[in-house]
Length: 94
Image: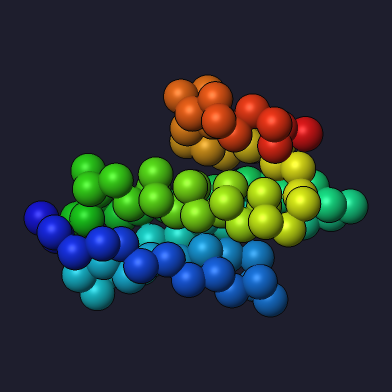
């Protein structure tokens, strides 16, 4: 298990947030239209699962949305559950 903080990068050109953990890419994909970020996929391969990586990707995406003034539509089931568990992001819901 990794003990280092998870570093997330945002590739706005490809609408993707990425974290590389133990050499394994983990991603959150979104679509942006009319100021609404639709989170469509969160993917963490099983070999690095259970470390909070999806949560960190989602948190980073939501914080980016807030900073940009975007609303969020959590189409990905993980992102929807994350937002339900973290009501501090309710103001972002589209």
